[in-house]
Image (cartoon, rainbow, N blue to C red; front, side, top):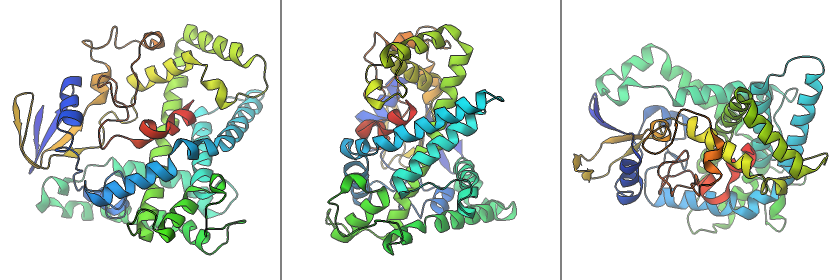
Amino acid sequence: MLLQFGNVPTLVVSSADAAQEIMKTHDVVFANRPKIRMFKKLLYNFEDVAMAPYGEYWRQMKSILVLHLLSNKKVQSFRAVREEELSLLIEKIRQSCSSSAVNLSEAFAEFTKDIICRVALGRKYGEGEGESGRNFKELLGELMELLGVINVGDYIPWLAWVSRVNGLDAKAEKVAKQLDDFLGVIEEHINGQKKGDDNDNLENEDQKDFVDVLLWVQKENVIGFPIERVSIKAIIQDVFTAGTDTTYSVLEWAMTELLRHPKTMRNMQNEVREITRNKKDIREVDLDEMHYLTAVIKETLRLHPILPLLTPRESCRDAKIQGYDIAVGTQVFINVWAIGRDPRLWDNPEEFHPERFLTSSIDFKGHNFQFIPFGAGRRGDPDPLHSNMKWRVSS
């Protein structure tokens, strides 16, 4: 479906075949990102990985993310962090159940935030740890809200003044300033304020958080490409935006569907009990045997994708998609919500039925275009494609 949003032709892709043409056949043509004003304000002028223009800078930044932060070895080095936070979450739920109802939304949000903070920054930023800790969840919420706002100036440039009048620009500048202040923790690492910090080498790489690793990459120039301080902040901000709200929303939907489907809940409980065999704690190694859990997560992502419309792309030259001429500069949205509920691809697509994945090899790594919750191609989400980090945390 082609829409004309002001000066910008906008293509909405709602079929697996068309999505494959965009993200595989013509991947290079559609590998760019539109220069959305709100993203520019909040993501360090496109210095991050998610919204950086397609080119050498983006390739270098993504290589750092994939090779040094999201490699399987690096992800596994934080297994103890994830297991410890999971134990704390379960204990918190257990204590709450004895006296009152449990707000799982808040519990999941705190859980994912604590994991990401420890992995990326080396410590938690929770209640009682100062103003930055108290406002952290609220700040991330405001960031995600602003990233989803439509700025009329992006489509009708002569109306850009509207965002100044209605306060949108001022709010974005305030949130950007607060985020930058929070990421001042990078200076804390540089100044050696973090206990046991040693950025001169990575002999104990498994014990280094993401900021440590990025500072080492910057100092040693290991990729032959200079990295500015703002680039480090932008990458860390990507880690937070991609690893917090998105992850706990999947957990919320999974629990919602399990509660709505008691039979599925019982199947899930039986698998966990059989594999753990009365062990006090569940370890990550146990997850490899939980095939029904895998199916539940996949079915949750099919029905409730993290982003119903994937982050927009932009064509860098004219292209022909399914016989239609698509002009250079066209903004493209992939409607994964519609693809995941397409009756031509899925039996009873509106039903929550994890069993459909038990006998299927369909995965979310970007090869099966009927199931692309994390996208595909060059601009696909590197987490599930290279490290399964989201999958581990969600599990």
